[in-house]
Length: 154
Image (cartoon, rainbow, N blue to C red):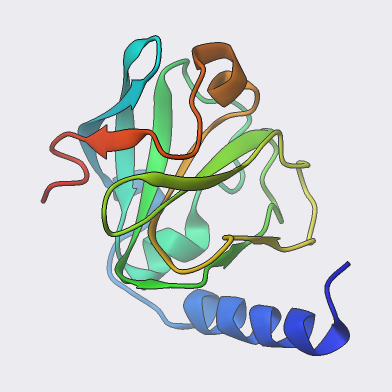
């Protein structure tokens, strides 16, 4: 269980990400391709890029479904601890926390829709890839897998 001080710090960091505005919404986000190299072979996703404060704040909120092999890539532009939540998000998600080295650091599997509980990276990361809940297990995506493609190499 997270200490009260750590939870307060995580919520403050999350609030800072959510409060700062930006020009684009997630609905207008750039789309690109991303590939994860798993032990069973490459797995390719079509992703929306959330690289502005507003796009990161909106994320996948209010959406009722997401196509298979689609996702949203959050680019925080520098490595740092990241805390996400599922408020107003109706789709169970797998959150892949990815370092600047473009390797999966940790995975939060099947996050709970509509939850305000924070989901934290296991250390500093630059990216978070959100995909449909359960897909990381189905496709054999594991920590240490390499991530490549135009979405992450921009």
